[in-house]
Amino acid sequence: MISTADALQIVLENSGQPFVIQVPLEDAAGFVLANDVHSDIDMPPFNRSAMDGFAITGDGLRHELLEEIVAGDSGTVTLGQGQAAPIMTGAPVPEGADRIVIVENSRVEESVLYLDNVPDPGANICWRGQDIKEGQTVLEQGTKLASQHLGIAAAAGRGVLDVFSKPRIVLVTTGTEVIPPTWIPSPGTVRNANMSLMNAQLSLGGFPVDLSVHSEDDPESLKETFKQLLKCTDVLIVAGGVSKGTRDFVPSALESLGVQLHFRMVAQKPGKPLLFGNDQEGRPVFGLPGNPVSVMVSIEEYVLPLLRKRAGCKGYHKRIYHGELTSDYSKKPGRLHFLRVIAYRESHIWKLHHPESSGSGDLMSTVNVNALALAGEDVMSLRAGDILPFHFFCSTAGELSFA
Image (cartoon, rainbow, N blue to C red; front, side, top):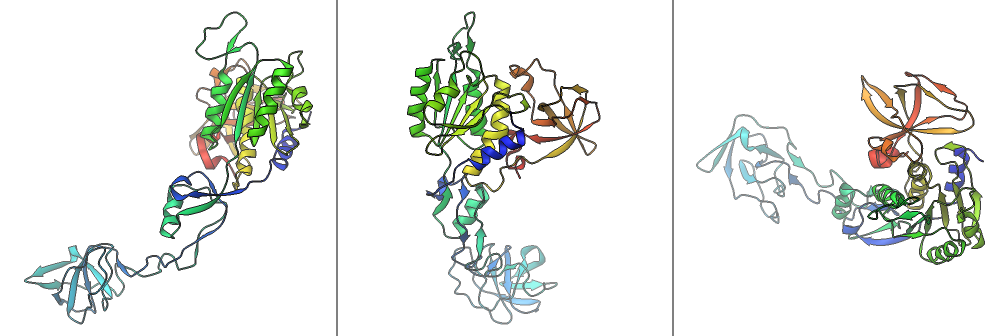
């Protein structure tokens, strides 16, 4: 049995390498940029008005009005001393103008503009290249692309972006006793909560699942299922059948296909019987314990960090915060406990409420949970008011979950 820190290190060291694909700009949200993006023009590309008003030159108080300049004009108007042109926001500043007077600070009588005071030179003008110079880097490699990044890329003249591909993910749930959610359980059967849980958790983390299948607890069926699925995935995730019971065939089925198992047990609760390995092509393979809370914790602690690294994300380690426990908690030494908690702010302090639970099968205890607190291996007794490290679920805090 290895520590959680060693387990995570092994997972990340064997995550595999991201590879680069090209995607149209409109499809690039959520991907990680593989190369820097440079602007092909100055931005703004011309001197433009930042306000509706009048373009003038000099500090005179009386100006003869010329034709209006609107957004999209080609910029053929030229101003001389004592002349002004009505101008719209975004329109090109005419040749000769050195400032923009806003409408509210002016009056017009019989095609003459009168001013009570004159703004400083450069007022209300966005100068060419003021925001970005031609050739300047506007987006850096490793940026996870959000809406504003795509807007910047479009302004920089890009219609296609080089990004790191997202890994193809296949999920397998196991168990002869496991039935679809819509079936009525008979004695000895349970509904398949893990499939919906994993699909949603990975999707909310930014990694939609490509294929989900269920397999009975039969060595040959599992072996054939894994053999076929490993051909069409980058990461295989199996839930159930990984412990040391007489019907836990997942480890032996994987090993029979040449999967090298790096570990099979981690000093943690929940999720002690957790396995991880790589097949002969280097594809990562996870075997998660079957209890739903163990599945949820394992995905948060190990699967999502691996997927983020594989997808080129700069941040893939969980970002640690600290909060005050609101109730007592006792445990045996030897394993790190992931306490499912509700983290909330009170008087500038994070508070950590740990709902009562009947164990790793008690998914109802996670209804309002948004974080995991970490009670270390050597900890035995915690009291209300003790400070614990914790981190948010990716579905709760998104990019703030990772550093």
